[in-house]
Image 1 (tube, rainbow, N blue to C red):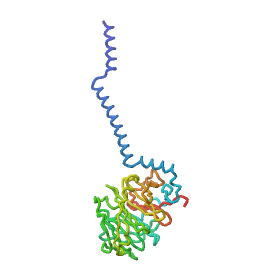
Image 2: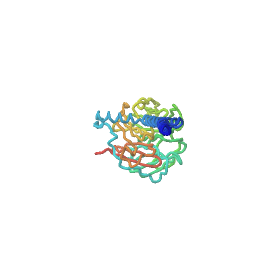
Image 3: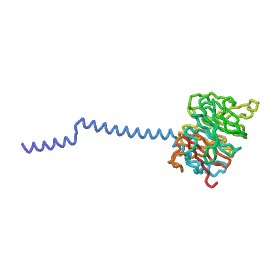
Image 4: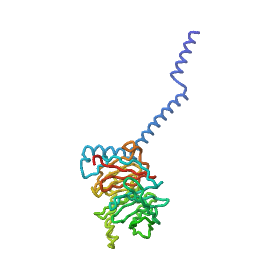
Length: 331
């Protein structure tokens, strides 16, 4: 009887090991499910991030452009070949809110906008020194800036989606909105997501305007200077199709017309990208402003302005007050 009891005790112990208590079994199953759900959530988040930041489109474009040899075309800027010359230089005299930038070919200098506290137009050297200040009175939420030649400047009010054009005084002084002529495109008004970038093609008398997001849009306005001289002949083209499928950026913070190539250079703050479009809207090249994927020491925190000078040097400004310049290698 004792031997039988010992066998029963062993069998009971074995049964307990093989068949755990129902509560323990449910806990194990729940933990397994949580791990599976957690893994699925991580995979979904990774996929969503990849799609949101367009990493898949960037990789596809990079691979196809390398195969097709787009960088061999001398007519392209080919932004991957641009190396950093000045990296995140703080501009003395500007503390915050540095926004758009443009190149003044007449005086071989840069113009920029400081948005708020107070709003002003400033002139900069090509190495990022502050030269002059022009306070802007009554201009609203100025984000875009373009130099049109012969001292004429255009700025855009983001919220009102209004473009104002005025003559830059020979000596620094305040400029009032009453000195400007303007036109407005109140399309898809949505507050602080409006006209973010502005650039001018002098040979074609065209302004290009980008709307930041929700939705991203690109407009071409022809006959601007001619209309200022008394012949009203504005023609507006919606070029949003150029950026709808090919421009893999979540927003657009500035635009530059490159007179040498006839191409557009687009800047994205959120995606930390510079992108080159042909004169028919075809994506040609791009360059990262992310420190992990470029020669920058750190990621540009909030890139807001881009310009190209007559020598092909590329300039970027970032909030709060940072200045960058890039040159194509071998040039």
